[in-house]
Image (spheres, rainbow, N blue to C red):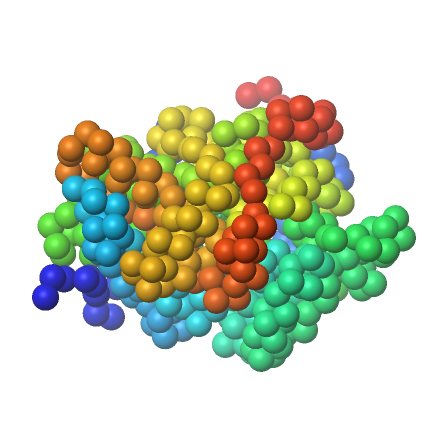
Length: 455
Ligand SMILES: *Cc1c(COP(=O)(O)O)cnc(C)c1O
């Protein structure tokens, strides 16, 4: 039998996270406080985040030991398999060898518990009793409720209203792990009540749900906020994916020509790719490709500018690629990856050309997702189909050129809770939608003005 899976045993697991800040050609610009419009201090951010995570957020230290308590929980599903997608290769008739890192095997079904577990641990260490957070499609809310449950923390999740209505089983799994959940906008917060007063049928947005969770955390001493993507410490915790992948590829004597991930806020892409960015900076010949939806084209069409992280201007202002914090994704878009901004680290690497980005239309993503489900058996999350589409594009290029190529992509999660999106695709109800430049320009006219002090 041909080898399908490359496994690591527990003793071969990476014991440290990698911080790409240590090797950036251009250092990150500082975050600004949304109220004072001055550079945000750790003391200010300590109102909603524990000091240990802020330290990881801002430090250029290259490696961080993964605490034993965190390893213990991660070991419930890690190391995750590296798999060769032979069925997909065959269906495409490509000479390329396609590998994927299977993050869908976590209890919540995605990569998100990798950071949720670490965040719950550090908050617990600093005496926090409760976490408030938001969730879009429900993946992050599930991951955080799982992690809080593991460390004995309470957890409140604000879930974007449209998803809350479309994905009732996300609520069930969040409740199963002991957390409480509200559809956002909710009556629980000022931001939520203001949005409902304006529009009682408000569909909600990720930016608004973030506002509710941040407000909840900022107004209660025993409560902190946790974000599932974008921030540097989140990207740091996800690098266990890439560190495992490097060990697994080494085991079979393979070296990827291209490493691919989908990008919403950038965290699973950071996870698979930052350890390869390190190797690339050291001289490895590897392309690193981020794939985003054409209907939410943050890196390919957005501006690299300071913007708010949320609609209510409560989250820090950071320098990143953005479509404007007022961005609302088109209703037709079914593939997730809806956030208006991007991880400042991924943005910085894109500006420095260490990372490439492409935007792909949703029908091609679902088509690739279906092909993957029918050849590899795993029904991918709609988000992950973007990475699969990226791998298919590369594999077909290799076929056209008649060249061998080694492709590695991250399968960020499975789609078992997203079957309504597949139903819509199979019923022919989805269409492509390219977010128009005029709407990008309009949203970008609302960016905040901050000034960096002279150096
Ligand atoms: C949340 C999520 C994403 C997008 O978030 P990133 O921070 O960009 O990784 C992608 N895939 C899955 C399965 C998710 O749950």
